[in-house]
Image 1 (cartoon, rainbow, N blue to C red):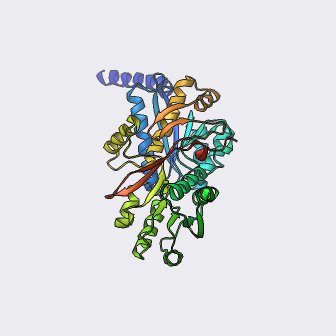
Image 2 (image 1 turned 90 degrees about the vertical axis):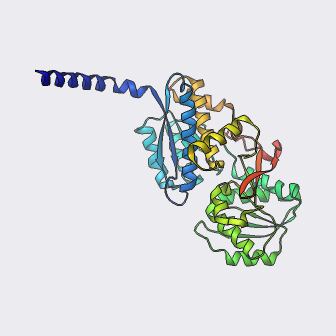
Image 3 (image 1 turned 90 degrees about the horizontal axis):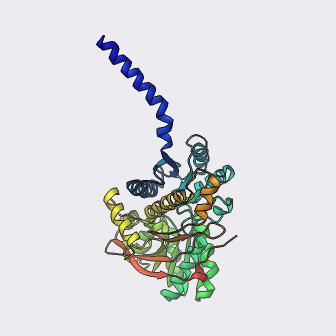
Length: 384
């Protein structure tokens, strides 16, 4: 008799769970997130996803969005366009996300952006820099700099702030490197810069003997070199080992403690353009850095801050829209005016932001503030 009663209680309990499971699931709002959690860019993917998770935890700790908890749905795209397309379709079709966020590189982000735009689901690029991303359509936004904008900032840093005029460029041959190079070249004349030579390399390269020898022969006043931490680390180390002592200016792809670990002592004095100021007194930035390093157990970087920023923007839009209607959410994203760790986020008609460039320098084995570029005309992104 007792066994029979226990069995009946279990059956009733299961029936209740089945009945109310959809309602329980509806009590969360899903935000899709893809990043390179494995492969060559896994370190950036880790930072981006940890930043995103921190944002979701902070939002939920304050009661979520309109009484519902944020649920991150995270997939590994390996920074590959071929992986990003099915992930985007899965997030939209299977997971039913209210909004999507890319914590990945330009190739994967460009591919996913088209899928989200076609489905009319809002999508935010956290840090991918290719100009075609937001041109996918009016449902796509970017919370970081365009590559060309950051390249123009690099030209001002080199030619104006540092006063260096004879410059050699070392350009990574992908969307990232090409966009930065185009921006730097477009502003070079304005700051009196003469580009004496430009050398190119591929993502797979780690040995730079030929380029180093040519740069040494060129005897420039400064080097503008695009790359990621895993290419820039070996490049900088080999330049310094060969006796090339002039300033090396990089970009946000260097912005990781991993770069400093790889380059070692050669990293000292390297300056980059980025969007995270480690020495900031702004509460949103200081609080993010402290909270991230406590949660993640490693130092905050631009990618982590950008992942955090994009989720905060997404959540703010969901709160403002107070609706599951994609158009209402999209319109709320477009009207964003939010102060976060990477600056104040406001979008123009193309879904781009205008904010100051944070120049960081390696001192004592860590990134620190060097200077700031806050020139609205120079840094203005395209509006169409």
